[in-house]
Amino acid sequence: MREIPEQDHYELLELSRDATREDVERAYRMARATWAEGALAVYSVASEAQLASLRERVERAYHVLSDVEARGAYDEALGALSPPARAEPDLGFDDEAAMAAPELPAEIEEFEDLSGPEDGRWSGASLRRTRLARGLEIEQITEITKVKPAYLRSIEEERFEALPPAVYVRGFVAAYARCLGLDAGRVANDYLERLAAARPSTPQRRRQRSGRR
Amino acid sequence: MSAIHEPERVARLARAILSDVMLYHADEVRRGIESDDLFERLAAELEEARVYFESRVEAEAARASNAWNRALVDVLVFRSGHVRSRIW
Image (cartoon, rainbow over all chains, first blue to last red; front, side):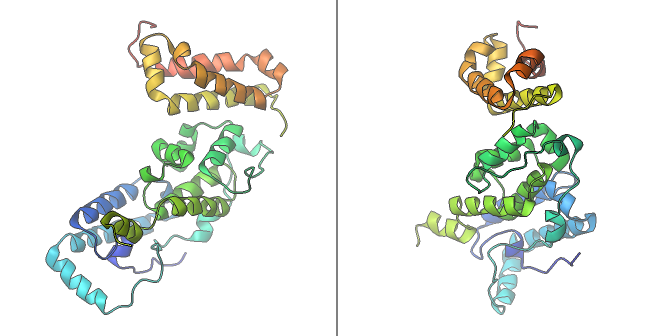
């Protein structure tokens, strides 16, 4: 498993460089809740050491970005660096491990019908249909994946505004797909495309809120 | 897509579908239990759910197992045991 790469604090919290104090607080609360011990689906795709490192980095990022002076100094230091090349932070998960075919629970393996969605693209609705076709309740998915029922329901209903940042949604959807015996990578990619189309990235949202183009 | 006929899978499908009704209409289920008009209040949702169930299950298996009606009680009613109601 590769090491967790060093990202800047803004990338880690999925904030733009002009994030307000409220944005920082909100992003910090979201990140802390998402990576809380034993509360998330992603724990199954990252080691405890990785999660501990992530939690520590989230705390460090918040400590710097919530302090005006510390943030100013940090921004100055960042100014000497080139801007980030990717839109989403790489949180250091081993993608191959995350997307690997899981050992399916016995009650899922007995279902032979593992065909894809009708239109060839995975969506919240097709995930729900597949879950029902396997006779699985949301609570059972939660037991296996540790993703909260409210998030699973939001994924199925595609209530994107109720979901955390995209990088976490990818983990949730991949865990959900694996639980259904599906190709986690393909399902997550399809779903993230739908999310990206419906929910602009953070800088775009900020521009929209401020009326800028 | 072949229809389900094994009793255990038929029962599991019924429970999963009705569990979704409960999850997606939690407030209405609670109010229906409170006022003892659950099946009238959720008539449209339950009909839609039943049609889906019957589309996935062999008719004879559905009839013989009585899985739908059992799941109605097991999932919607018994799982609402914490709700204050004159039903109990």
